[in-house]
Image 1 (cartoon, one colour):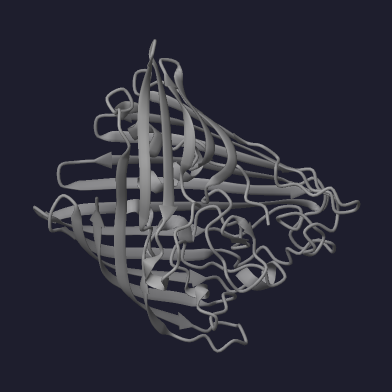
Image 2: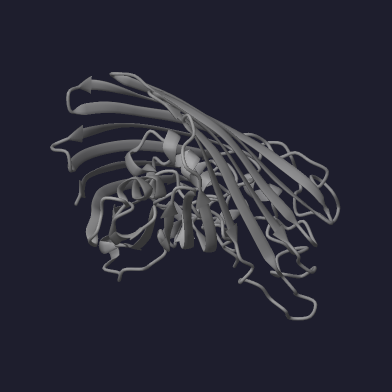
Amino acid sequence: MVQHGKRAVVFSILAGLSGAAAAQSAVTLYGVADATFDVIHVTDGKTTANNPSFNRVSSNGSRLGFKGAENLGNGLTAIFQFESNANFDKGGALDTNRDNFVGIASPWGVFVLGNATGPTRALAEAVDVNVDSDGIASNRAIVGKLGGVFDDGKIRTGTRSGPSMWDVRFKNGIGYMSPVFSGLQVILSWQTPEDKTETPGMRFRPIAFDSGVKYVNGRWLAGVGYGKLSERNETGFPGLGPGGLAGLGMDEKLDELRVAGKYEGDQFSVRGLFGQATAKGSLGKIKQNTWGVGATYQVMANGKLTSQYYRARDISGSAVGAATSPYLSGEDTGAKFYSVGFEYSLSKRTLLKAHYAALRNDAKTGTNTSGRGGYDFGNGYASENSGVTIGDDVKLSGFQFGIRHTF
């Protein structure tokens, strides 16, 4: 499965590093320990599966990392970061599928090589109402999924459907983040085509590019992110329908455009996002628009309410309903998602949180894509449970209660 080089230089992570690089001379150990007790309910739609409800403990975005910098003189600073997921709820070992890179910070910007978040993903995270954009209440339940056919940035091959291809980190990436000019900053990333197949009849060579512009002025944040993946693929790869990541045949091109903004007042914040995912290949073209709004309100000195609503619209385009396309229908092929929550700070580093999230697939989200479609939570997927099948009319809902500590 291909996980393209998509987000190289994050708005948040590299901005923090570039600002601190000049002063930092030693390695810093840091991390997040975040655990929740989840109560998940799955309501059968038109699937034949007997979807169960279940309880679990989740380690939402828990991580352990090292970062550091060395002043090289002449305005140059060497920077690095190694960060690993810490899935302690399952007793699993650390893995390195987070932001890991090495680079140079200079007066002309920051250059990095490695595996990192890029601007398209970072923009959606910036307007999510939940701390770290993690857990079942994350807006990744909706954004960029193109009918719910993606699973952790790859084409969905089974019942599970995770974040979109633009909401996982780019591996084999080269990234650049410009200096800030009057509040404006440019972020670029490119993934080298290392994930390729040269087998005759199944040749596949993906090349990905991600770009963004961010503007920050006081209480305001606005940004645009645009990602493009080009597949020089032959029919038959990866063996799903006509071939290609979106099932649209040879030489697919997949694009994601996001426009988002946020205003933070003394006691409240409002935010919004519009996204458009497009895929085209030798069998035609499809398009899907998504949008979302969110708000937070400080109800007490240490406590705030959060809420957001996101909607994936129906898929449209020339490939919908075509005889050779897996996209059978354009009607009722989206999803609706909302979350509400309360976060209470016990200290600057320790947070109690409670969230409720609900996600409803439309009537033909699975049928539309020959069974490959279906929306799940963006993080903490319900379909990680072996008995859960995502598809037409399936509704997911869940409560999370937990604690988050940073160090």
